[in-house]
Length: 357
Image (cartoon, rainbow, N blue to C red; front, side, top):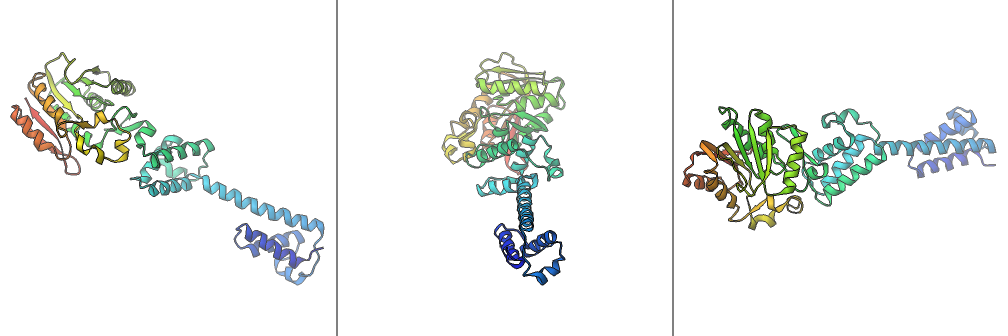
């Protein structure tokens, strides 16, 4: 039979090998329990022989100690707080901007928990399928550089959630400033008629329609995919005062008395396309991004043709690139628009223009 001191040393090593903290103390407590001795008295009986039944009891308690440690570690690995932190570190390793916000939005989407309430669920243990879905999202965002909005099929705009997929441009915060400028111009116009050129996902048309329920909005786009997504958002957000039409700019538009025409056209010069980030260049539709003539093609076309579709004193509103506003201002002035004004976004960048026919 093995003696107590030998079993104590072997048990201590066993716990150490399994990364159990305070292995000596833990071993002493186990032997004290099995042998019914005070812990301090174990060393007074160091040469005591351990029976087979006592040895079996020691082994059972040692095994339980290891299992508890492993179960605890597994639980810690899959609770919400731990996974959140690990996911943020993973995205940061791949230099993903706003990593924590991105992770929180992913977890909120998968777990159906409001992002602002995630902290109340930090001890939540995730199901395996939930973890798998989150891992898949993280991989596609980090390695494939797929924008989060396409992964979740949604983006918030002006306080509303819109359906988004790779067939349309992702709505930007800057465009909210353009919508704000249009709404301000419409403040003193009752039951306004508005034309939105290049609707994409429909965020401009639908937002104006929801903010001004007395308005009638016509949105046009040449892309059937974009129009399908805009129609989906129209239904989701119950914007009954919006109509969408397939048209190459004004080609299929028969009404010629709009109070306001608004457009966020493609404006990135062809020469700058290759400088765009992988998120944009590899995933967003090029036809919604790039324009000929140093990005100014659609500003020339729309400014000129809009004169035939605006009523007298009707308003033209554009979003534009960071360095284009003054060139477009000149285009509009030369065509006879009055009171052409350039407005800035929240970063102080010249982001759009308004002008009166």
